[in-house]
Image (cartoon, rainbow, N blue to C red; front, top):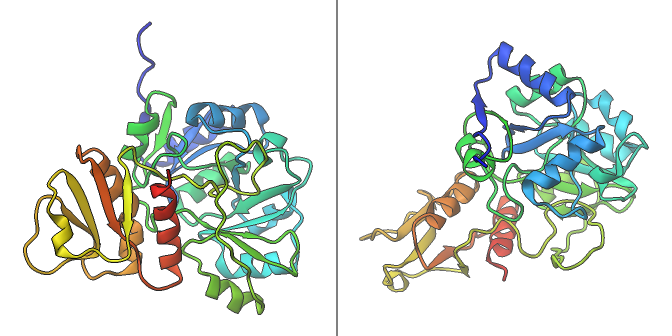
Length: 331
């Protein structure tokens, strides 16, 4: 049998957005740009459509999906918000913040991995917001890549990973943030928990809520069959095929093996070889976050035997960068 046709890439014209909105209402999958990473979207209220996401990605059924909404009024249609959730939503939405709340029966069990909770966010990317409004339904959308691999931050990344398994890719340019959303468990508003760090920092959450937000880095083994509370909790995730080795600090003497890549956090001084890279010229956290996944992908295609990466220093966004690196390096 001939291979399936390659996915078509769409510019964000009114005509194309209307076409893709119809596709979503009809139960098809569409890869979409967000400000975090590219997602693989389906009608969140259509269990059959959502099962296609798991099939295309090779995603285990115990890993729930994030549901994306267009407006704050849509939150109460799929979840049971509380005062703490509304406070965070009014402060940070649209934006890279996901809230885990008790779900409404309208959300299919496949979306929540059988749990009584649902992860919800309101994205900020203008094209995705227009598509959500036109579709008229909430959209479930994990990252648009084979499960466990490095997340996609461009339409080309989606094409490379899922181009023969899906039909539609909405091209919205390079993801502005480059890391997945912050996830907060607010099922009990008196005890908020940070499940996954992201661009919205723990300090910002605590300042807005006026209370401590607990965080203990979670690492769930893939072998478990228990339903996860949210995405991004597996010990190994966001991983290139090439082994990743982490360093608190890389010194120039370590960069000798030409068949191993060395990724500094900031641009190193002095001579640089063809196997020397950096995440941000000045060591800025936002620039490093935006380039992290694209750098790992590029080096994974570079025939290196190992990828050495220098960890981010500091807190806040550094926590999110290091969380992704630690999961990428896990074996």
